[in-house]
Amino acid sequence: MISCTAIIDTIESVKLLGEWEIVEILQKEGLLHYPKPLCEGGRIVRIRRTKYKCLPCGKEFSPKKNSKLESVRLPYWKILAAYRLYLNGTPTDFISQVLNISKPTVMKLEAIFKNLNERFYPEAPVYNP
Image 1 (cartoon, rainbow, N blue to C red):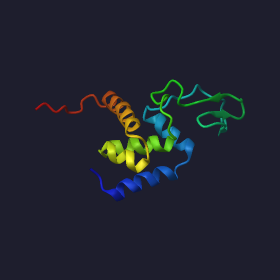
Image 2 (image 1 turned 180 degrees about the horizontal axis):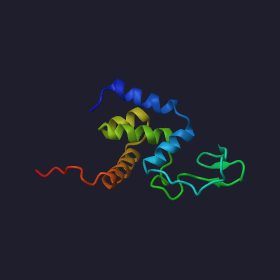
Image 3 (image 1 turned 90 degrees about the horizontal axis):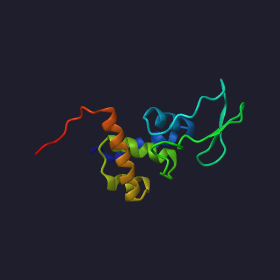
Image 4 (image 1 turned 45 degrees about the vertical axis):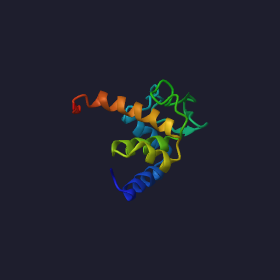
């Protein structure tokens, strides 16, 4: 398990990122859907909680639509912070307390993260007693 200062640093570093930067990180990790290609050089702005709009072409989209996180109603920064803490081996109860997320929601996120990691790292060692 990582130290408390490392956990706080992880959360603070996530909070310093812009929302669209967090969305791009989650897309690269395979947790959010890439929207269909927008016009070249489009400026993207947030119009609602999880809806974005390309200003030049006027297309609206949501990165959560058709993604693994479609049913999760949390801000993107909390999802990214929970993912980074999960990768560091932080216990579920601690993630729940630090990020102020209910334990069932954290367990749901961890199931999504575990499924994603097994897909990306199938050769991970399996413990057989």
